[in-house]
Length: 210
Image (cartoon, rainbow, N blue to C red; front, side):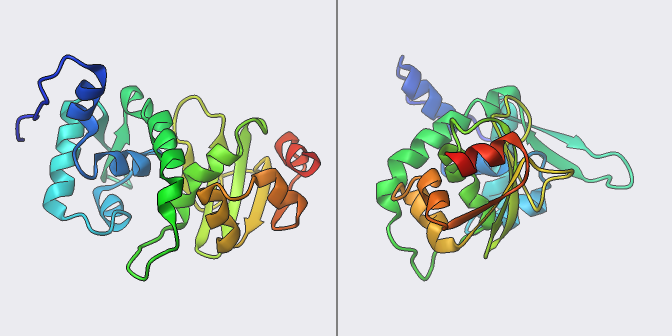
């Protein structure tokens, strides 16, 4: 494990960048916000990262108290990485970066990779103020679920949520991209028929009536 580099500046922003400023670290946090992940799953959902760099960043995150590693009980018996409470506190940091980066998103380039769950954080932002609950999201790129308002644990996950969700959203990639760019409000997209909302939960009703 390499020693942590430092800006050697007595400034909280500089100290934060000492910990999370290396390339890939915050994107690993983005992936671990989905809950415990195996190394192979992390590597698959971080296209472009080398195995050596990913292993190094995960070790750094363990050292700095952002993530931990544990072995799943049989029959899984695999090691998984997961965020600590300190690591999960980076959620609003990633959300703020996402808002700032909306102007940088532009059109999708032919070389750009995409995963359905990368839209999870923009949708969480769009759902702020609508209430708390579990939301299934269906996109052309794949399905995932959100835990809106969750104060601990995972904030999203691949596939439908276990159990009955509070709402189900169905939308196309164009609408989801517009939400991610900040070009349309979620409630406006629901009202215009660009997002279908199903379910009998309080959150579904709030979205339909909003």
